[in-house]
Amino acid sequence: MFGILRKKLSKAIESISEKFKKKEEVSKKVETKKEEIEKIIEKIEEKKPEEIVEEIKPIQEIPEAKKEVEKIIEEAKPEIERAKLKERKGLLKKITEKIVKKIKEKKLSEEEIEPILKELETGLIESDVAFVVAEKIKNDLKNSLVGKEIKRGREREAAIEALRQSLLDILSVPKIDLEEIIKKKKSENRPAVFIFFGINGVGKSLNLSKVAKLLKDKGYRPIMAAGDTFRAAGSTQLEEYGEMIKVPVISHQKGGDSCAVIFDAIKAAEARGYDVVLADSSGRMHTKKDLLDELAKIVRVNKPDLKILVLDSLSGGDVLLQYEFFNKAIGTDAVLFAKVDINEKGGNILSICYSFKVPIIFLGTGQKPEDLVEYDPKKFVEKLIGS
Ligand SMILES: Nc1nc2c(ncn2[C@@H]2O[C@H](COP(=O)(O)OP(=O)(O)O)[C@@H](O)[C@H]2O)c(=O)[nH]1
Ligand SMILES: [Mg+2]
Image 1 (tube, helix red, strand yellow):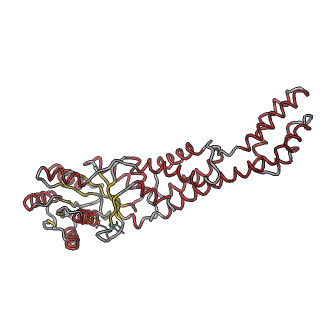
Image 2 (cartoon, helix red, strand yellow):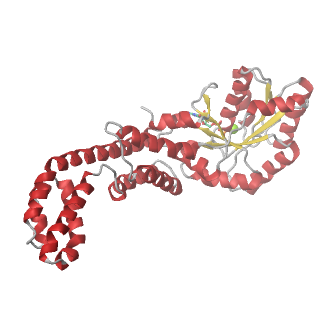
Image 3 (cartoon, rainbow, N blue to C red):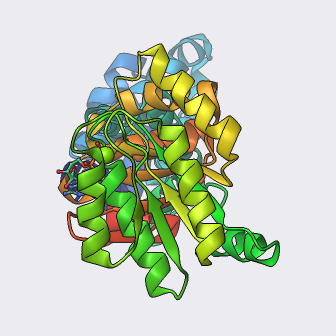
């Protein structure tokens, strides 16, 4: 599950941690050569700036430091050239101090971390994370790691913690408590009505049945409505699931009115004391206007307590378009992400959370009735970056 995304995140963590460790090493090396460097600089007051870099041999031996030294001297060049001979010594001393201080620093600069973040960004986009979300993660890491002093031995944790915070921020969406809705309706002597919608094949019928089983196992009395009257096998499939989990199914014949099936299921629930109606719907291509008219009618007539959009996590970036499309048409109260068990990327879950801040209620994790987990941002993050 999420293998590709996990690998990309883990690579970034390792690279950042390595970079910190390298800084520590360089800083230690410079410390041992500090006096040597100072002595040499004392003697080179007569030299031209470009010769200075050549002279500071101990620095040359530390390749990571060499670049920094060249940069500092390059910047100081005009000042050194302008200085009178007797002022040079003091000036060079100042520059030496600056050099030593700079390369002894264990903090990462933006320039140093940028290549790692760039690679992470590409990796995230390859894992179905939308561009804006990848940018956010990149900026979060930059803000929490650039210029921060990290204790020795804590490099890896520092990188993990920064990433954890960013992911948690993205994945923390509002929560919805299904049981609370059912209980509230029950107190009004009415069944709660949850409608599941989304395009064909995303996993509406199977995951609706999983939710029915979960609620039944918690002691509620669910009933299902075979609202997919468009497909020939729509009702039979739900009836089969119903038999498997021992939950009744209300269905009409193929070609019937989806809205009427759900209406009947609500009436049946009221008459027979069921406390929650889980209504399926058909999912013809989402570009067809008749599907939207049908859904709008279902909503208008049956007034569901919860409109649950089912998204197939394998659909990549298309889930964002599907969300926008359905949300504009009938509104979305919550999302169920199916097929995460066979998804190696998973980045589109981050995209939906970040872009719409919509509650995610469940993740579909397989083809069996019990393969459903409640969405928990913390657990999700641990799945992505935990060991
Ligand atoms: N591995 C896996 N397969 C799933 C999951 N959810 C649905 N499926 C499969 O996806 C296919 C379509 O599911 P279905 O419920 O019929 O989709 P619908 O057309 O939206 O009602 C079926 O073969 C399901 O078994 C899931 O969470 N994991
Ligand atoms: Mg179906």
